[in-house]
Amino acid sequence: MEFLGIGLGLGMIVIGAAFGIGKLGSSATESMARQPEVAGKISTAAIILAALIEGFTFFAIITGGQAADKAVTAVQAKPVVVEAHK
Image (tube, rainbow, N blue to C red):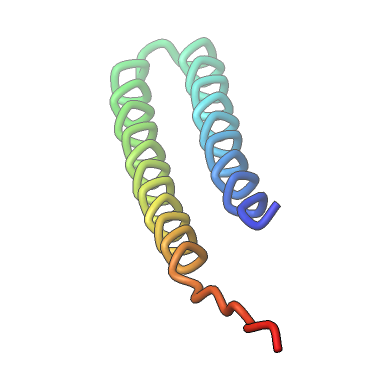
């Protein structure tokens, strides 16, 4: 239960990136259908933007993974206090 937020955050990152790339592809396809003469420029821009979205997504996942690793290490490093019976 302690790491639920990290898992949900990483899942939201992936869903957001998928939505962004899907919207980008949809808009690029619609633009190419409306103006076929600039289809090459639109597809080049769409590929570059998709790569930037993926790069940001990978950076966010790696950063979140490192935060999760630090959290696990902090939980495992908790000292256990055992009280002696009197």
